[in-house]
Amino acid sequence: MATTEDDKDVGVALQKVHEILAVKHKALDDRKISLDEQEAAFQKRVSLFEQNNPQSGKESDVLSLNVGGSTYISVLRRTLTQFEDSKLASMFGGRWDDSLVKDKDGNFFIDHDPETFLQLIRYLRKLDQKMGNKNVHVQVPAPHREFGGLLEYYNLTLAIYPQQWTVTGGSAPGVVRKPPSPDGHLILHSPAGRPSSFILDLDSQKKRKPAMYSRVKVVFKPGAYGTVGWASTYSKEHDE
Image (tube, rainbow, N blue to C red; front, top):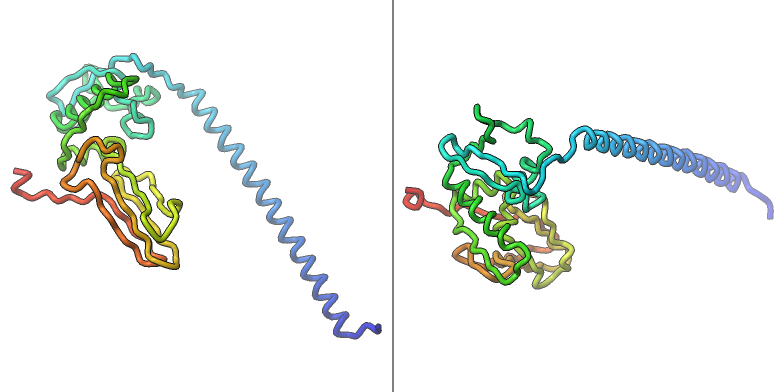
């Protein structure tokens, strides 16, 4: 069969496409190598930082705290670091002891309301004493605005008041996403197709009822996203 001019043009065009794709593939390969090198360099810097700033704190260390300038307490380091992902654990893990604010006597200064902070400490102490004994139930403090604000500050909301979302219709559990939010907000997504229903159990262990209602149900339209979390319902009369 004779080759026409159109066939030649198509062949030239295909050749150019292959050349362009080859250039693109090479650029992507080069970029991947560059990213891998950057990742390796970053990990090296992290390792070097950790070597120069060792986690010197011991769980048995006794820390002296000045809370609000009027209350002085001593507490074990392990009491403050039980929840590894919290800001409280990060602060008192030992690595940053030299950089934390201290008073003139060398006590770690905690700029929070003493009674609210002590409420948290009492609960954490009971949890620490419970370690290893699953039969012991530790009563969670009743929620109030000051205590809730303290938990948000130290990223402890979900640790103290656990939440558990379950999908009851319209979608798979994988669409439920929990960002590392200190205020406990969750992002829910209903895939396109049909509405999705979600149930929030405020007490995933079913041992307490930290709010007036222990369950909340939400329904999202197909393809919708939404943020669900804590909201203040306190009145002035309650605060007074």
